[in-house]
Length: 365
Image (cartoon, rainbow, N blue to C red; front, side, top):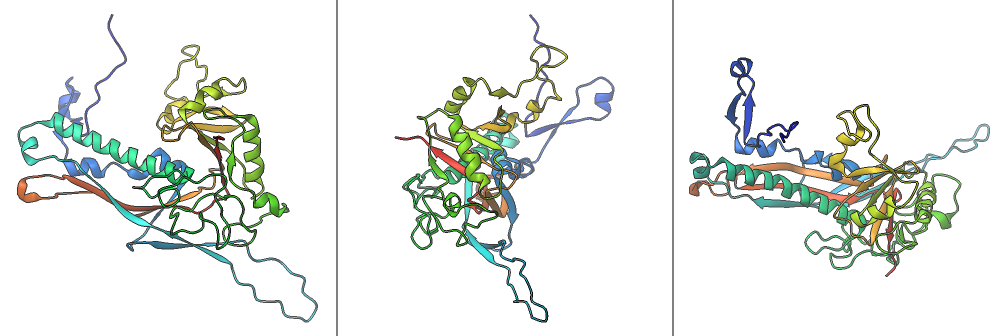
C-alpha cells in the first residue's frame, strides 16, 4: 500500500533553490548553507519553556545584573484646606540575576565538509539544536519548581530541593537568601506582607497572602486532585492574579484523563470525526506540550517535571526573567586544526522575580 501525504524534509545544512529548475518541473537545487549561520538562525528565545515562563531581557553588562521593579506604594490621602500634602516616593524592589556562560563542543571539521560528509554535519547540527533545547528547558523547569541540581545550582545551594517547609522570611528564609538560592523561589512557609517580595494588592487577610506557595498536594505522586486546583486559585487570587495554566509531568497526564471534566485538545473537524487539521489550535501548540484544559485552565506536559510535583500559574504575568547577555554564537575553537564552528556558547541568567503568580504542589512522602 502506498504511503501518501509524506513529503521530504531537507536538513539544516541544505536548502531548496526555488528557481527556474523548479518551474520547469524539477524538485529544486540543493544549496549548501553555512554551518555557523544554520546554528545562529536557531532562535533560542523561541523555545516553549522560555515563552511560557519567562520575560526576555537583554543586557550589555557582564556578570551578575541587578534589575529594579516599581511596587504599588503610593496612595491617595485626604488633604485639609490650605495644607501641603506629603511627598511620596515610589517604592522599588531590586533583584539580582546571576549570568553565566554555557557551551557545547560540536566537533565538525573542515574535512567533513570538503569530503561532502553532509549527513554527519547535519547530525551534529540537529543534535546541537536539541541539546540547547534540552538544556534550557531543564534549566527553566528546575529553577521554577525548586528542584536541586549541583551543576545548575538550582534548589538550595544546588544540593537540596525546596519543599513546603522551606522558609521565606526577611533575614531568615533560605529562599530569600540568594547566596543559597540564586534563582529566587515562590513563597515558602511564611513571609511578611509589604516587606521584601510580598505586597497586598487588595483587601485580603495577611495570613492568606503570607501562605506558602509550596504546598503539600492532597494526593500521592502522579495524581492531581480538584482540591489542589481550587487551593491554587485561592492563593494566586489573593495576590490579585488569576490562575490560567497547569503544568504537569507525564505521570499526571493519566490522572487528568481519568477525570470526566478534562477536555483534550483534539476537536471534531469537517474531514473526519477527530482529525487534527492544519488550522486546529492543537497543531500550533504541539511543540509546547499543550494537551487540553480543565475548568478553563490550560494544561501543559513537560518531561522534566518529576511525578512528585506540578505547578499552577497565572502566566499572563511571567514569573521568571530570562536575561540574555550574549545569544547563541558559534566559533572556531582551534582554526589551526581545521575545526569549523566546533564550539557554541551563550551567556544568560534566570530568576524568579514574581513569586506570587504560581503555586508548586509537592506530593506527600
